[in-house]
Image (tube, rainbow, N blue to C red; front, side, top):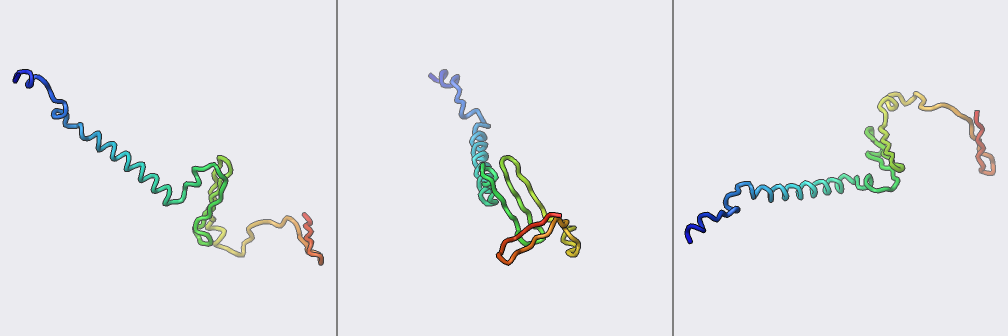
Length: 111
């Protein structure tokens, strides 16, 4: 009987890397949980949905950003530093004139 016990191998005792598979599984679960927590904390869950939306980050400040999504297209607009440097410089062009009548009606006349 001693001879049969000696020849029979116990795989659990001979595999030193067997416990590493459990550590890998734990690390993968931790990584997924961390990604879910970051998505919730940064409020970017809207980016994963199929809705159209507009996000304004830091409204009214120098580093303001506007992010819009229409369909599959995501557009990011950052406020330009050059446009803030000289407020007397015009940012557009005149395209017409608008007049308000006494009745409250507004008439636009393109040039």
